[in-house]
Image 1 (cartoon, rainbow, N blue to C red):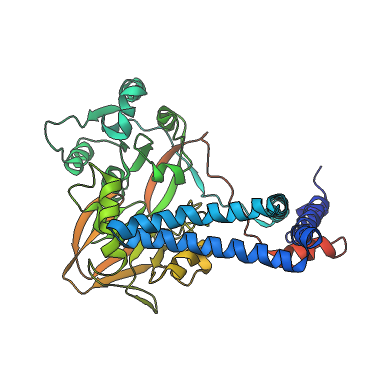
Image 2 (cartoon, rainbow, N blue to C red; image 1 turned 135 degrees about the horizontal axis):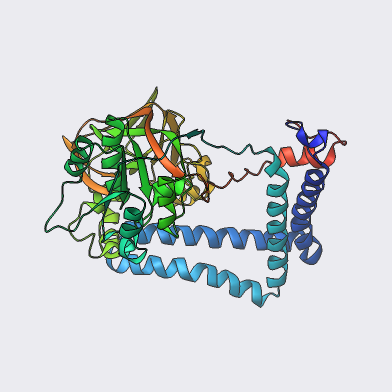
Length: 447
C-alpha cells in the first residue's frame, strides 16, 4: 500500500532518507579514511598526485588528437604512462589500499545518492494514441543494412504474413527510396515502414509526414538511434512488426535542415568533415585520426558560427543540432531523448583550444568548452559558401547559412503496444538535496 508520504511530490520517503544518509556517510568516509590512515599531508600528496596524473593523461590524449607523426606517438605514450606512474607511486608507498577504499566509498556514495534522488525524477512518457491496424502497409527493407538483419531475422516473410507489401532495396545500383515511397502512397498505402539506417528512415519519415501517414520504424540498422529513442527492441527487429496488428501511435516532431527532414541530428564541423572523406567508409579509424589534427586545431575546414535565439557561438570545432534535446549521459551530455514531442531543437557546440579545455569536457554540461542550448531554430553560418554536414549519418554539402527548424507533432509513428520502452532518466547528483533529505526531520528535504 502506498502511503500519503510517498505520494506527496517533493517529500522524501523513509527509504529515501536512509539512502541519502548512507550517501552522506560514505562521502564523508571517503575523505576521512585517507586522513586517518596517512594524515593530512599524506592525503594532500595522494590527491595532488592523482590530479596531476589525470591532467597529464588528458593533455596526452588532446595532443595525440591534434598532432601527427612522432608528436602523436609521444603524446599517446604520455597518456598511457601517466596513470601507470601514479599507480606505481601509490603501490610503492603502500597507499594503493587507501585509494581503492576511498574510491569504493565514493562509488557507494554516488549509488546511494542516485537511489535517494530517483524518487525526485518524474518519468517522461510520450502520449500514446489508439489506432486501428493498417489495411495496406508498405514496407521498404534494405537487406544490407545492419549486417544483413533483414535476412537474418526473416523480416520480409514475417511482414508479408501480416499483410504488408515489401520492397527490397536490392539494386542493381542506387534505389530512389523517396520515389519508391511516393509511388506507394499513390497506390493507396495507408502506412509506410522502413527497415534500414536512420538516414533512410528520415527520408521516408518526411514523405509520411507530408501525406499524414503513420511511419513504422523497424530496428534493422547498425546503430538504430531513432528506434532507441522510440523505445523499440533493437535486439530483435522482428518485434517492431507487432505494430502492424497491435500498435499505438506517437505524434513526434520532425527536424528539417535545408528542406531535408531529419529524425535524429545534424552535425557540423569536425565529425561532418571527417565523414565526407572518400576513405571514411573503408577505414573510419585511420581517416578520423588523419583528419582530426587540422580540424581540432582550426587549420582545416570552415570557421563556423552557430546561432540560436539571442546566443551566438563563435568558432566552434563541432556543432550538433538534434531533433529535441538529448538527456544527460556521456561526457558531452548526450544520452537518450526521453521525449520527441517538445517542439524544440537541441544544440551542442564544442569549442576546445587547449588540453585544459579538453579535460574540462569531463564536467559535462558545466564545461566551459561546451555550450548547450535549446530553441525552435538553429542557424549555422561559416566563412565559406558551402559546408559539410552529417544528417542522420549521411554525408551532405549544404549552402550557408544552414537553417535548422523543427515541425512539432508532424510525424505519426506506429509502435508496438508492448515494447521495451525508454528507461527513466537518471537523477543528477544534488548534494544539497541529499543533505536536506538526510539531516532534516521526517518530512522532507528542500523541494
